Length: 274
Image (cartoon, rainbow, N blue to C red):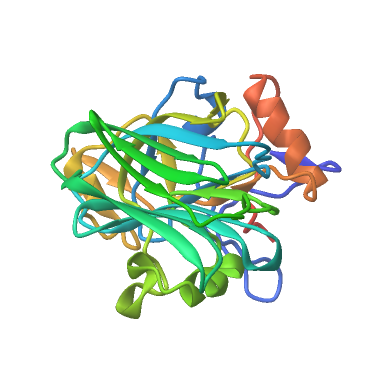
């Protein structure tokens, strides 16, 4: 890997006073070569992926299928204007959904738990008149007060967790998944696939930023492993994954991310490289 004829990634060792290396791994992450239907595995307490802002007009429909053994974790967060937000989390194995503002939000809870390591279909649907949560064949619906308005969303759609710059906003919402000792993490641990927002497919092909995720599904033992250290999983060494930034604000990395997804020049750049 090189930039302006400089070999910036070899050797992959820090050099005091000259070069710092943070969370950079040898080789190219498999997420760059993942297909649209590839599941996403979230394997650490700080995992997440982010997508461009979700535009909601008359109604919002978010759907996905998940598999997990975790009893808690942040599934979704999208900030909005003037305190508006959408969020979903797992609390005590139940799916919780929130739409509105911090002090005047509507919320729903599934009646059945999802942390049984089986695949479950989840759909969140909301309009100015109601909020509806579907878990497999179960539907829970709640009418909203008269003159309610749809949330005005802005910023990124976060799935599985959030980045550090957004974390303080989520903590203020007092969601159980990021409260107390989980305030510095709280990400969903498990697998997620078939993610759609208003029928638009969301996959690793169109992410902005990823952290501590992989393409495909890992085993349950990998979800429960502390990946801040190297540990053996299935006779292989697993390390904390780097963060890849493919947002438009990072034009240098965006170009290389696009090249990787087009399977051209095999370059790898982490947002933590210096």
